[in-house]
Image (tube, rainbow, N blue to C red):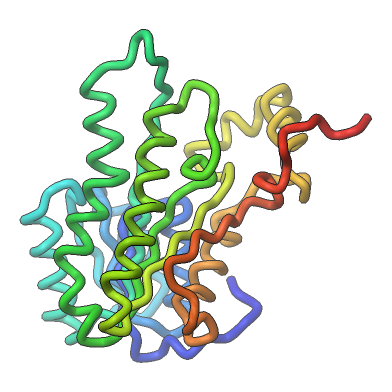
Length: 258
């Protein structure tokens, strides 16, 4: 998946939301680089599908509700019990729902906040001792929607903006232990869940008009950035929010010349 080769052999990586899309690509990218990878998600079969063509001794699939503190703590304990350490934690699980202030429901906010933000706090609380022991890495998958606004997405944007600020604060708190904490902020990324929108020519044309590189991201684009940010080559980078967006946030919103 990656052009570069990184020294991940012997490294243990945890990836949430790893059954599909960006999370699946991240898990496979680390496996390709020789790491041992624990994949967490809601569905056993999709997790197994993500790792089943890699050596079984380097993978672990754990069905986990990332919004449950006991479930996450159990998963982290299982990973350390299996592999003996934890070096990289990738918080990727996320969800999105349209939000209109006039009709917004409390339960929609609870769902998005629970998965996008609260689960990150839970994951860090459970994994921080292990990351301190290895002087490891936390990588949160946020969104350019946490940097800018979107129409009819205020709640999603709010959770992703909170993720960005949270990780920057964690970078300060964890830095004394040698733990780095960074954010990868993708723009619109092609996946099974988004393909129907990309197949709509009207939506696709308006979307790509905002992207300097003229295409939507792929999960592999995001995975390559994660490989770099967690690697020794990024050893003096912490508290960063790295847009992986094809130039989306480079625009001030002025339409492309015709």
